[in-house]
Length: 162
Image (cartoon, rainbow, N blue to C red; front, side):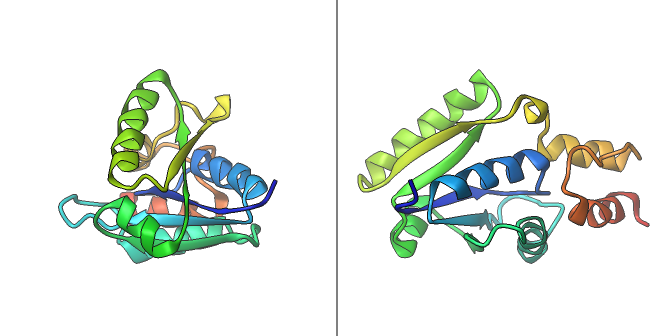
């Protein structure tokens, strides 16, 4: 049922296989998926917004209906500007649901024209987070099962000073 476009927002610092799984599944449900990288200058990130966008474009090159963009400020303002009515979020655990539920309710109160859809992460990705990938990479561990092949070298280079 491809009818509307959606936005999948996040920091993607770095993009993981779990993120790509959600993007692939959303791309099968919507005519267009806009992956929106959050630019939050108040938080220190391992990768710049442009680097994160480049990694996502590499990892999503096989998906013709996926566009990569960035935004700062409130997600609802980005949603208004983009004309999207659906926010897609991935859930790894019940704890994620609590946080995402609160954000969805706040977004809906701020802008009633949007809805949130939650996609459950595939079990093989439920333990993967960007912060864990950064930590494993920093200590020299194998991250090949956690990040898309096209971005693995960039992540390793950043954390191992190679």
